[in-house]
Amino acid sequence: MLPDPLTRLVEQLQKLPGIGAKGAQRLAFHILKNPRDDAERLCEAIRDIKERVTYCTVCNNITEQDPCGFCTSVSRDQRLICVVEEPQNVSVVEKTREFRGVYHVLMGALSPLHGVGPDDLKIQGLLSRVKDGAVDEVILATNPNVEGEATALYLARLLKPLGVRVTRIAMGIPVGSDLEYADEVTMSRAMEGRREV
Image (cartoon, rainbow, N blue to C red):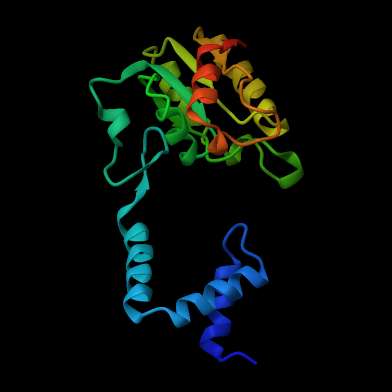
């Protein structure tokens, strides 16, 4: 039997993605045995992220200021939008140091099996940005898996009638994986080899 506070911590840690019962228990015991200062810093970091980090009202990327640095930067090409599924995908594209446009984060991908439809994604903001007429090209950089491909095709059907060039990143990234795990060279080649949708 574990003390109640430790049991509660294990239950909360289990709610994190990729953390099962054993992993949560290991983490909880690690926190317990380490100095109190370490636990305080962890609590402070969690509190900080919830208080200071938000989502950009233009592109949905994570930011401390709204709109984010990409959307307000004069050195970024505002006529070129790269669409990604999640905020962590932005940093993967940025690692290439070749993309100089702006982003739009969908906050997921179409997945009827998991109950995620078009209304659950941040698509309307993208359409509004394109309808303004200030966008020349939209690069669809969704993950190369079934959900990502379905999302890319759906977006292409919505965007093409608006008169914007719609491209898809090349498949230098293995099918079935996530952009989050792509290295700089693979992501760079995928951006270079994008094609018309």
